[in-house]
Image (tube, rainbow, N blue to C red; front, side, top):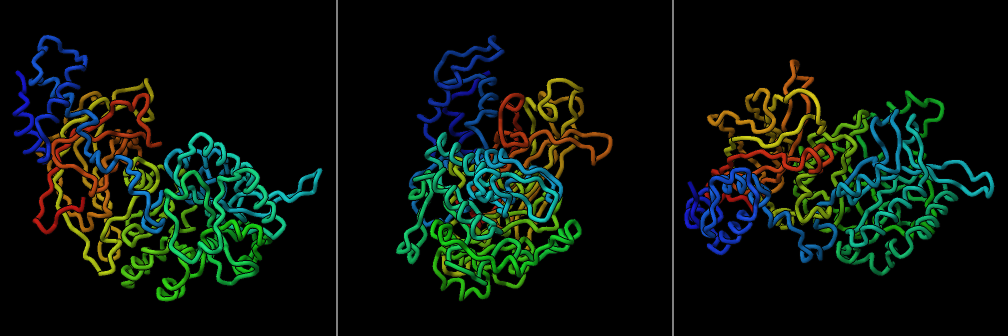
Length: 547
């Protein structure tokens, strides 16, 4: 049996896959690549250029060329990098130095390198006064989670790690350092000296005259490090740290560990800023009062909000005001301080208000981090994605809904948990999750397939199961496919692999879902791991997904 080029084009690509713009030339190019494959079944070898075998067709279905993630959206576009920074979603990390627990874990310089290679372009440093050099007496700024039992690392070592990353990746788009600065002036002066001496011309130093206009673009700042911290000179009561912004009980939790050394938030707010450090800073964290005041402030003034504040602002009907603010200014959101296990909140609601930096504990590879990974697959994984048009209009716009029907057909080359080569055959099942938002609230919908026992090589699931998902906001919603290994107790089920795709980047039809390990890589045992799914968009003409 064989498939002709005409049938492949008209009966498959245009009809089933919805790729109406495809031409016969596109098909011949696909066929040419398939003919070069060395397939196991040589008995059905076809030499005619305008035909492929069923084995070739199966190979195409599972290939990267048939990926459910639209290649046009995944491809890097230099022309999309010329807008002000406020017009982008930016891949962001919270408490980047931590390897795990927020109160008793370890800090590591390596976590910054891992975050950068995972695509993060906003990373956080909590800087405190350390000791002094035993020979020179010079102050030594340190980074750790203040007033906890977390280990300490040197500020200087982190900046050196950034410099090495930029040396290897000189065309990286701007890396924003979110400085939670708790240092006294002498230590801040050392920070400024270290930043300038280590980074040199790779440190962006804004000119005073440039602060009155719009924010620079990612392209203008390419290969540079940008500081978020305090811009005004001298003492300021207007400065906004994560500690100030959080509406949670972190202060109480920390006081349990350090009753005698606890520092009040009021004391932190009145720390003076060294002029040497202030003039290196672009983004000035200011306290939120009203949207009118915030929007009238210079574009380099920005806000930080805890996840609970995000929820409360949206519930109070302030989403549109926030969207308008975020068109010209920056916002950063971060997990509640009560998440001492470094768990995460869903970034979807923050993205729906136009927040550029929804910072997550990326050291915890949970479903929120995986959804974030999927969002930033777009635009070549450079860490910057243009916000959709609905977040850049002045008029209040209703979110675009969509209805999806999903079938999980089969899997291919599913590895054992952790990619190990030994052990029993896996019992895989697939959990499909939709992360969405509606009416100022996060929405999560989950569906699960049956279990296929003792087959990770080519499992086939129940074709009769169709999963229906009503998407409320297709511009920001993300669908996630996660493969689990079934154990006797549900809590013992083991993560195998996952993939997340924004609804706005999803292609319909019979598609391959390329799976990733918990570090968002496809190497070793994960090289060929994939699912075969059928996705249909059922929607009225006025509900088309925004592409």
